[in-house]
Image 1 (spheres, rainbow, N blue to C red):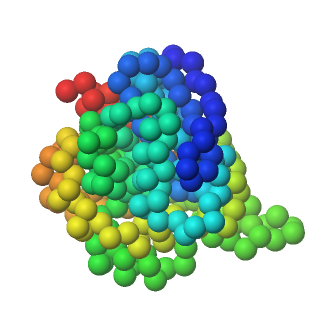
Image 2: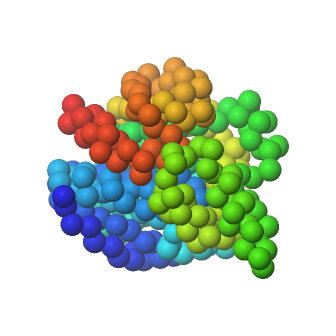
Image 3: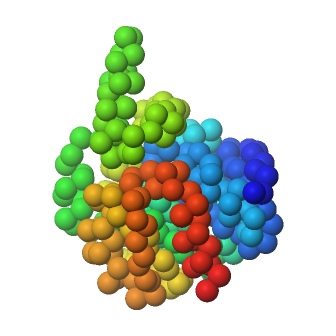
Length: 262
């Protein structure tokens, strides 16, 4: 597999931590919150065998800068494009999982000339129903820090029902949640505030929607979203759960590669 290099890239909004592998057609990978590029740790070297795989830490997460301005999908997308600028990438295929899929849609809608193809894994359909449901709920992954460390168990317990029985995957989630700090629970709220409906008609890039079959949120959201994207088709990822890219990296990379090669 291709060797992965990691570095920090300065952009107007701050410093972005990025992992890259391979050469050829650029593929930008955007993670769910409160994860980091580590969600694609095993996907990057596979894609790097054929493409220039670029996995970034969304600003505010992982090892990227923690900005003072409020988090928005628009800000996260603008920073992603500024990273492409800094790397000298004019046009890329963009892959996003969960929160990352919503960021990817904003990139495709607001910067259409920068997107070759679009891959949306377990995307949300942010309509009024979604905003009512998730805007009113307590933020997922938000816990009160305690001196006895019991908040670590609380974070673990929140995610465990939606993960395979894997200590490694849950540990990686907890590490990223701790790095995110006060932002750990905010990703779902940021998504719920996003005005997606007027952006959907602006997405013209050929699109693949990946539905992890064991992700309870993916299928109903994808089925609501697909009719709004006439350039999209859907495909199942059998056995995939909420951490699909790091749970099934070979299968995930294969679906992405097959679509990019069409």
